[in-house]
Image (cartoon, rainbow, N blue to C red):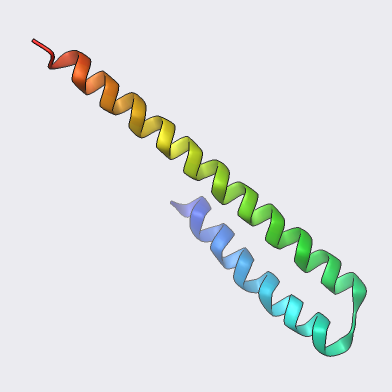
Length: 68
């Protein structure tokens, strides 16, 4: 969960950087904001897939243990 919160905070900060980039027409700030947003989204999606796989394994293990 701490990783999720870190990436959500990073998305918020990158959004604010994107706003600053739009106000100042700063291309470097824009590129950094886009990179940070893409990075955080990719990490969040990876954490989501990891959680889904973990839940599937736990469910399968529970069914196997309590089959009889």
